[in-house]
Length: 81
Image 1: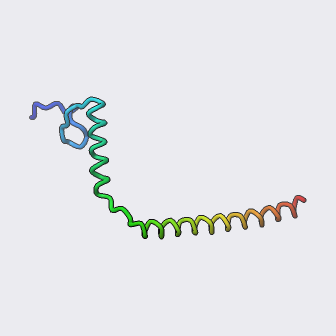
Image 2: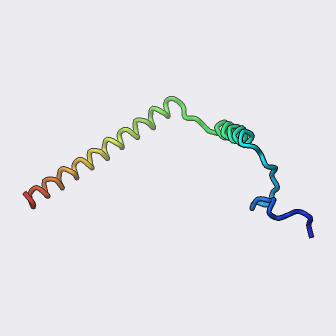
Image 3: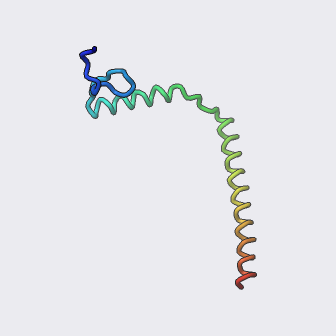
């Protein structure tokens, strides 16, 4: 039997010391910076291409929704006049 109280260990099984709120915030910021260093950022050319594709898609979808809206509006006005 172990002398360690089970309530002190988190569910992951590894014991971690209690940290204050500022230490936890500093750890979080260090982890965010470490993850941002792993990101592969797009080149300027890729960014322009992706932005163009997204804007075109949004405009097409807005046009489709506007067309449906017009058709349904005309149908409701025809029925309920």
